[in-house]
Structure formats: C-alpha cells, structure tokens
Amino acid sequence: MSPVLEVKNLHVHFETYGGTVQAVRGVNFELNEGETLAIVGESGSGKSVTSKSLMGLIPRPNGKIVEGEILFENQDLAKLKEKELQKMRGKDISMIFQDPMTSLNPTMKVGKQIMEVLMLHQKLSKKEAKKRAIELLDLVGIPFPDKRVDQYPHQFSGGMRQRVVIAIALACNPKVLIADEPTTALDVTIQAQILELMKDIQKKMNTSIIFITHDLGVVANVADRVAVMYAGKIVEIGTVDDIFYNPKHPYTWGLIGSMPTVDSQEEKLYAIPGTPPDLLYPPKGDAFALRSNYALAIDFEEAPPMFKISDTHSAATWLLHEDAPNIEPPKAVKLRMEGMAKGAGGDMNGDVNNE
Image 1 (cartoon, rainbow, N blue to C red):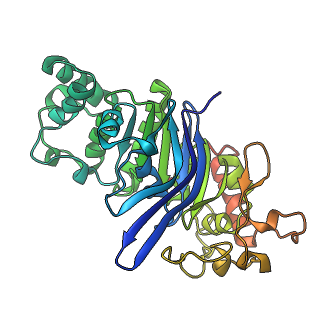
Image 2: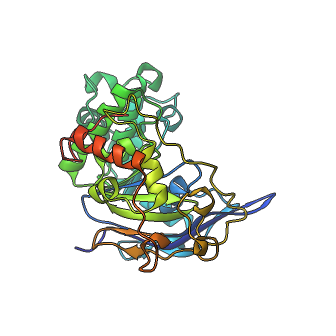
C-alpha cells in the first residue's frame, strides 16, 4: 500500500536576532491511508513546526523549509506557492489547532464559519452549505445542530468549541487531518470525549491522521504508530506496541518513565535530567547525550543513524550498534511498562487511563 503522505529529510530553519534556529533537522516519515501517526516529544522538539510545514504555515519570511520533500498526490508541497497551498488547505489536508477559541472567529456564527469552507472548496450554494454544516455539527456530537448552527462561539463550552473546529476541519472530507495538541486546553473528561470522537470519525471517514502531543498517555488511546521527536529529529518510530512495550531510545525510556499509570500512586515518577539543547547551536553527535545516563563516548562525537529493529520499528541510538554494551531500560521504566500493560488489559488500543 502506497503512503498518503511522505516526508523526506525535512529541514526547517528560523532566522532570529540571535542567529539561525534549526527547528527541524532531517525528519523522515510516512503516513498510510486510514492510520493515525502520533508525533510526541517535549515542547520545542519540533513536532508542531513539522506539522505546520505540511500545511505551508511556517511564518514567513523568518521561517523556511531549507531542504527536504513533502510528497502528497505526486506533488512536493514544500515547493508549492502560497496560492497553490491555499487551494489545498482545508480541502485535501486540514488542521485542528490547540486552542478552539483562537481558531474560531468570535464575531461570526459557527455555522457560517463551516459554510465558508464548503462554499470555497466545494462550490456549494449557501442553502446547501448550511444543510451540510448542520450535518457536520451532528456528526461531531453537538446536540440540536439545527439551532446551534446559528449561535456564536462564546455560546459553546470549550469541548463543544473544539467539536466545531473538528467539524470545520472535516467539512471537505480531507485525506489528511493534522491534530496539533487538540485536547491540551480541555479538562480530563472532555479530553477523553474528544479523543473518542476522533477515533469514531476516522472509522467512518477513513481519514489519515497526524496527532501531535506531548502526552504519551493520550497516544495509547488514539495512535497506530508513534514517532518520538527530540531536538528537531525523530529518534524512534514504531507501532504503539513497539514504543510502549519495547522502547529502545533512552529518551523514549524517559518519557515512559515519567508517565503516570494506574498503579503509580505510590511510585516516584522518573524525571529526565537537564533541558533540551539550544537549536541555535545544535550539539555535536547525539543531541540527547548530555541528558542521558546511558551515553557512550561516540554519542558526543557522531550522531547515530536510524537502526532497524524490525519491519515496523527503528531507533536512532548507538546502544543498538552490534558493538554497544547490552543495556536494559531502567527499573522505573519497566514498572511503567508493566503498569500500562495491566491498565490496558494487554491491549494498548483499549481504554488506557486518560491522563
């Protein structure tokens, strides 16, 4: 099966008064039809910049794609002009942003905001667009959609506003949906509802989803595959089971070790020491080496390649080299892995705790 989207050797830089920030440094991944790929990592890891690059939303003139390809339907999106990108946004690739209140126009009825997309990209009449807007509000679980279509954003709760944003993103049946931390601004209960809604919609529409988050607990519920980002690079990629039950990169160990589980009330959570590197001056070698208790001498000299672990699983760490010592994940990480397995009932795609 050929991928819906391919990202090859993507590099994104930002020019600042202090110099050039190398925000994304050689990212590679594929997105298959009907799958959800989660991209996880700390703030500043480059995950949101990567997602915005796909939509041509890098702030200009300071930000730019300096190298790489974004292949979608035989086109390289990295080379398209703004007018060409405008035709593609919302129609073929849509995006759900983090804060629904800043995504919606407070002075415009929500129905009209959905209708705009339909009238622009699908050339529907005003009457047809309103009918479709009501159908979309109903699809995303908003009660009394025929009445609420004529209400303003401030008349909706935070969770309902996010549902409206999802309706706008789905209006033209996009092939790819990018969700940039769509549940961060919501409380735990509403977060779980939105995640369940996205899973349900994906089944109905067979949309391919890129889900951006810093919360590994969310990932277990929504993703088929996971890409772990650190300092502008993907350091590990695999299926949900690969990442949660057989993690290989020390950074992934740190993320899992710091994640609460159903049995972790009395356990001290693991904290990754130090802070991410300054990407004005990316470090030589492995960017995570200074924060890792398992760094080898070569980590400070040469960046590791992506080692293939299985057909679905790869990681960029010298610990996978044939000459490297055999190092197991720390005890805290193993406890979290056991806790997650217990909480999931042996199925990572089941109902894991919703952090």
